[in-house]
Image (cartoon, rainbow, N blue to C red; front, side, top):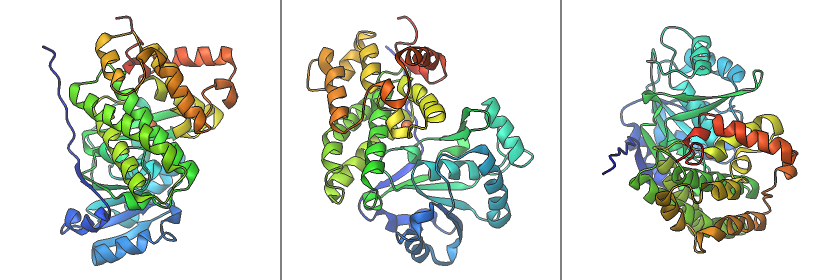
Length: 364
Ligand SMILES: [Fe+2]
């Protein structure tokens, strides 16, 4: 019998107004709030400030989308100077905020950010010189970063993407309050939901899958497919917001144990070179990748069959039609990539670290 391990140390609180649990989660510690520029206008900063009182040491709210090493270098130094004395970071925002907070939560073993950047570029694990507890509060239903240890860091100058991953970068706690995503506009809601759908399917056609990640991934994929088309038409529907938040959480828990696979490997190039937002970049190829996955391994086919209500052979076309109805093109040419370029891109993505997690990357 196959042996497997499922591990996720994040304490999750889920539900409307779950944010009110923040003082209990923080306990007798002090924290800095790391958030996005609009958080003040949306009333989130005042709410966290009311909840934490003097335990809140300050706010960093100029977190840019898709954190880049050059920006992180300045931010890391400033954060250490202003909030080095804090016990914890409360990260409230989308994937970029949560990933930036993970980088801010650790120090390099001996030096400042340049050492951290060198270790990131090498992709090696290290023991941080200092660690702050991280409480992650997502405001989008998609990234799953609140229940994973990974932070994506871009190096636009070098044209590369790094992944920070340490034992110390698991959040201590995640507070998933679907009401916090209520203000997300249609495009962000759609992109976040598609990112979560991608996480769920990538956890299934994955060499690291296990029965627990499968259960979470199937539930996430079915829930998001049933929810997203209605949600983008009814952005203020609290039941749909809650369903999307739960689907994104389930998908995050699933891929926290498998990592992503080919669709994400393709997406990094599409984001870096062609400027396609992450949620679209990692989902427009899902029908293509599904087609490559089917027939590779009978046990994976059996799990994929639980996601779709049509025979598996028809699932890629059905998924493509579902995406097209959401006005997401499944053709590379729609994103400025020719058919020939796309073949080269897919082959090189298969050879990348995430691509090698794909069940179709190696024979058998
Ligand atoms: Fe993703």
